[in-house]
Length: 439
Ligand SMILES: [Zn+2]
Image (tube, rainbow, N blue to C red; front, side, top):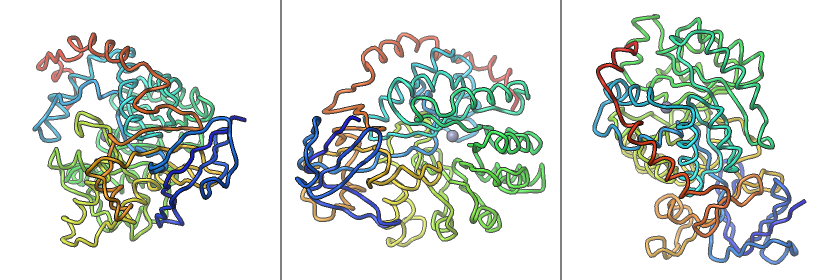
């Protein structure tokens, strides 16, 4: 078994939900797992040594909701509200995508995530065989869901079931697959019930958008006399693992419905700020023990696949929303950023640097002027360090990135492929394509 010794770093670990920073540590990785963590010099030797003096080791970050290949359309629809953004920009552009485009978009997005210290992503998109191939190649870990709309019909839905079976446990166990009904507003109660039944049969979860905007809640009440959370709960989706993307507008009774269930809420405040969607009241989830993970969403709405930004914005926006600087304190936001995603994805062996955990480890440099002096390591991590400080990224025991170089992908080749596709991809042919889509 390959042994790797990370030598001399500081390390972020967790005791329960509480972050604990340790100084001058060695981390021993054997195969895919962390074998030991202890005072530097006490863990013996290994053939492969990574000198991490002055660096901070953190658990690989978990992106609990993304549409990775959308990086192809980065910055394509700025300054638009959600409905216009979706109908006038995203749907027409996405209709230009071929499976190969999705592959190259996934590769670019995965390069970006690796550079930002993300080792695991819950991705929700189309042509997911292409995304799975990219995961296999880049060495990342992923939970993949093939997004499906009700108007595409049950035949398409059944193809997504085949995808779930085709890729479950592949890439040496780094890939897990769930179902991906798009949302509670583009999939009706009957369709969602099928998703719950199939999730039960396959032993998987569902990943979907729920209660993203006030309008969606109003529409759901008009259509079904029920909130979006009530609709998905009645359909049985809370009886299986689930990721609810955004879920900004649950009612008090919706929150009670989610209490004690296997649901994780994915939060991407940069998207909410950019699209003026409002903010979730996160303490209300946390008080009820509902799992909350951080997410990037797609790069068209949030511009980057960077969880450092989302972590910082989560802390700042929640303080502002509550009118209380004590809300979303350092302990809470670090727990959400590193362990919350693992809880949301039901990945118990991720989110912490402890013996027995999977070896998803990120080393951060702490030398920039803006990150010195380190008077408070927790505050430094939340407010001062960022994607630009990532030095080394390890996933499943494999080094994916070190000292600014990718070891599993060729970024120049990816950029060349992406650029060659842009003229065709960015052709919107708007009126025609809007007419083809159901509102
Ligand atoms: Zn989304």
